[in-house]
Image 1 (cartoon, rainbow, N blue to C red):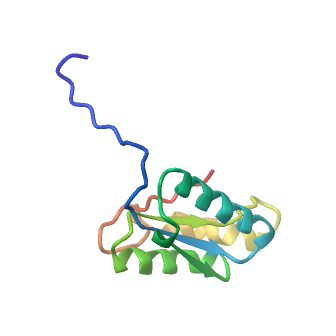
Image 2: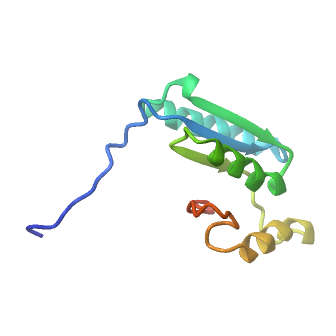
Length: 119
């Protein structure tokens, strides 16, 4: 397409700060998720001292910690990591129901995009 404006990232994390909010519940999985996220960010050029890890008890505390980190400012991104097992019992469905009831901005009044995606 001639004349089209193209915006493309470099894939470099050099000089950027990141917050990782990690659930301690199911740490046999979330510890590996944390290690993988740190490895990916450092491979992209992020310095270890620019990574802040916030450990929270479980999924319910993740949005609170993520919001706090985002409001503190200075982070290029807030990465949230937890294990999501679908449908094994009612207590595991509660975070999903709560997540769906929030507005597009995750209930945040500052207008920041939610940015949380399930994989």
